[in-house]
Structures are given as structure tokens and as C-alpha cells.
Length: 211
Image 1 (cartoon, rainbow, N blue to C red):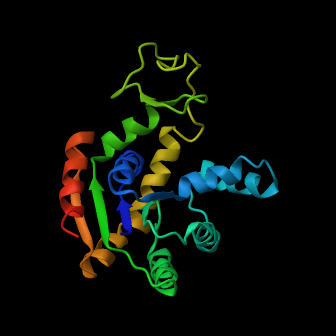
Image 2: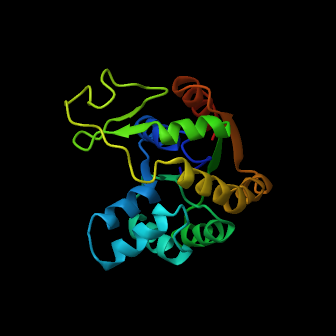
């Protein structure tokens, strides 16, 4: 089973991907994680990518597809989180999956108001040690600057600012929203409302159980 998660920035795709992965034994494939792994190399390519990502723009399709292609090939199935982002990427993914006798089974579109997405972005705080994620609006740590789990100082990512969020949101509206109609026309799209973690996951589970 292969699932695509579509949603605006900071709509909870990562959280839902993790929950779906555990329940259905699917492998999360996040292009954000793949790109951050490249950034950690500290080479010339990572510098180029960092400039693009910090500005809120999208990485070119060919590069993203090369990262995705390297990960495909097991028999478990995948949860595509943050990919595809454009019609071109969607067509390329279909071609890629067809070449290995596979396909997309369902596309989950998670909806959330823009103002909520903004707070989830600018309020996000991350522990660099244990990787636990907090939010000063929705999921506060006991101490705003300290991780509850390991006591490390929390950090705010450089791109978790309103200016970058607005650019990402505008890019999402322009490039990604057309995917809604694209997958709706294919009969693959299901829409769920992100109310809270438990309710959103319950909606998704109901959809996946019918595949």
C-alpha cells in the first residue's frame, strides 16, 4: 500500500505519517528528511540547497526525484510526506512506480486553516538531542527553553519564521493545490480535517481500512 499525504505547511503530515507507519508497517518517505540529510553533509551542494530552502522556494523536480528513486524498492509500501508537490512530480512518481509494478493507492488531503498552520510553524521548538518537537502555542514544554525529556536547550529552526512561512504558503497555493484536482480526477483523493491528532488519525484509519 502506497499513501500520499497532502497538506499546507505545518498541517501535521509528519505526525500522521508516523502514526500510519506504526499501524500499517509502511515506510515514511519524507523529502524534507531526505533534504536535511543532504544538508548535514556540509558540502557545496548542501550550501546551494540551504539557500533555496531558507528562502521558502522549492527544490527542482529532477533533484527531488533522484532522492526519492534512491529510496524506493522494498515490499512494505510507502507514505509519501511532502512529495509530490507539483503536477510534474506527480506524473514522474506515477511513471516511477509503474516501472516497478507499483501504484498509489490513496491520497489523503489534510485541511487546516492558514492561521493555525502559521502558529504551528513559528511556535515550533525542537530538541537537537532527542528530536522531540514542542510548540509554544499548542504543545508547550514545562520550561519554554528546555526539553522535558532530556533537559537540552530547545532550538527554533531558521526557517520557522513568518516571512518564510508566507512564501511557502504562497508556493503551496500555486504549485501544490492543483494536485487536489489531479488526484480527485483519478478517484484517489480523500479529505480529512485536522481537528486534533487523535481525531485526524481516526479519520485516516477509517479511509485506509477500506482499501
